[in-house]
Length: 351
Image (cartoon, rainbow, N blue to C red; front, side, top):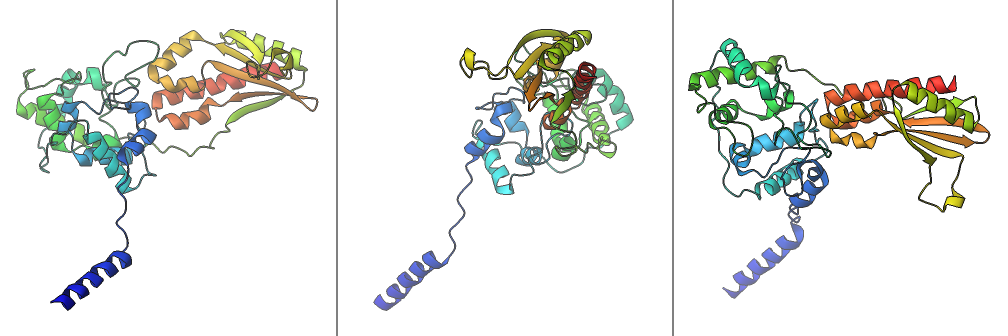
């Protein structure tokens, strides 16, 4: 008996040293803080992104919906696709999100909803388009700005979107329409007087987008230069004066002109061969902030003039390059237009 115990003990010890250690559990809180908190808030209460901690949201969505949303994102919207995260990391983030509402989420059957998409189209237009958009591409903007109250607690998601259609099952969409979602503008359409068959028709209409949902092939950074750069044929003073005239000519207001190192060194040590011009069109700024508050990365507008080795160079960050980071179709258009404005101003000033 003693010998058998000794053999068992030796076997267990050898197994401990020979077997590979179990992989450490990923830290979901740290991964969430690194990848998600900037938009959804440290405690999931929302911001640029929707609030994830709402119990009614948590109980209404499956783990698969959350995992697929993280993995695929929402092309053309603010939510990016986190393709760099491993499956283990994605599941760890979902577990952390679930910690805010410990109840069990609903498990939906995999049965497809059967309805009439043509009738659903009419019902969608009457009941859903006001929030989700006439083409179901979602509410405008991000749901929050830093300069004014948000119009709605949560901006309605895009339903005509490959990411949403990949993540959401028919039964989840149906349950949301039937029950609503407390804490959001989404109401119960059963309580609004629709029949269950009406809701089935709307679900079928939404699912029909899957065959024609727009494909957004975003180009990698580098498709446009990070900066717009021109050499000026004039000296520093003449170039700055020409830029001021061009800026005002494009209906922008000059906010201030300062050395690039202002505030970083003593005033007497400032380098007057490196000047930055701040300017703004407040109507454009107001429109852009309503679309996405992250425009603070490049607004108000800035042009830098640098004299080096006898040459005067004019630089500006290219919003068209930065727009790749935003994942927001409406803002991309603003970025494209702003890039054209920068080029127009600089070209006029350096011709």
